[in-house]
Length: 70
Image (cartoon, rainbow, N blue to C red; front, top):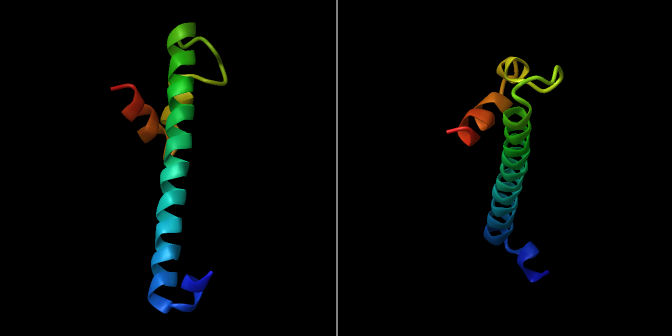
C-alpha cells in the first residue's frame, strides 16, 4: 500500500514482521515442548526416541523443554 513508499514506515513494518515471526515460532516450539513433556510424563520416560536424555543433547530445544517443566 501507500506505507511501502515511506522509508520509515517500511522499516517499522519489516521489524514488526520479524518480531511477529519470532514470537509465532517461539509459541510453536513451546507448544511442541509442552506436548512432548506430557508424553514423557505419561509414559514414564520409557520411549526410546522421545526421552529426557535425547532432549538434553539438543542445543536449543532443551531450554524450551526446561521452561515448560518448571
